[in-house]
Image 1 (tube, rainbow, N blue to C red):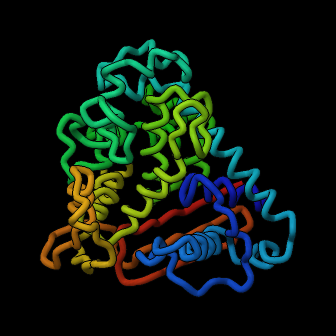
Image 2 (image 1 turned 90 degrees about the vertical axis):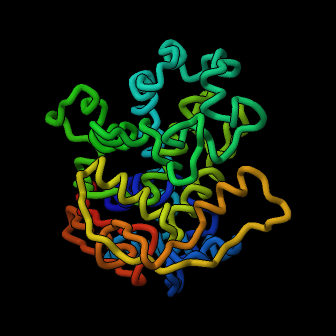
Length: 342
């Protein structure tokens, strides 16, 4: 039960998938899981994910994780099951989630509705001007899909509602009952976890969920069965951007925290990060937008973020295990969670 609980927590707050090689866990990697170099190579990505796994799993389970051969399969099964449960809940209320966009509600009566393939309104939310290939920078993820301004990426009202908080995240956290204004009744996954603020993984999961709901893939898998969209690659793309020390990344985290949890934080002066750049000789409209997202934060910028460290995860489980992870002096977000996972 303890392993299953950690797997559920990992899915919602850390990563939707368990990448290959992550359970080669001896010795524990002494690296910063939130460092920009985590994305420099496939090996660095695995090492970063492995370090993050040690943060998620309580210390009393570290020895079992390293020696118990069935830990891997039990953990992966829990992640897969939780991912399915999350998507099942979200799919059942897709019409309500997208109601503010004035779309044809009947399109969401079935996830596999063939009309989705040719519906112009949907295509304009998935492709620039509704034409060409499906893209990471899908219009649905911008505050104004028809404008697509860099600073408004991952701030579409579908993801973050000014009046009611993040629709998709709130359903994930509190269940469908939140759509009718109810907070009492059987506890949903977020209430069991007593989450107090968002994480990069939670936001990245919300982004690919919104993308998936507009598609006609029958089930949510790493690669869409019908569209062949690599949802896992999309997830990593959003996650990498959110981990960077940029003004935009900090503003997204702060925005979600304020709208979902009404969390007000103090201003911090971010540390510039010049770790990545895009070659100017291949510039496209997407490259220009990515340049803006990846622009180093100015020292004088007045950004709000959670105070203290780049990541603080406090876990209080039914077994009274606790973890406090403090890394670096600043990063794209701070996560403070008090979780009670069965």
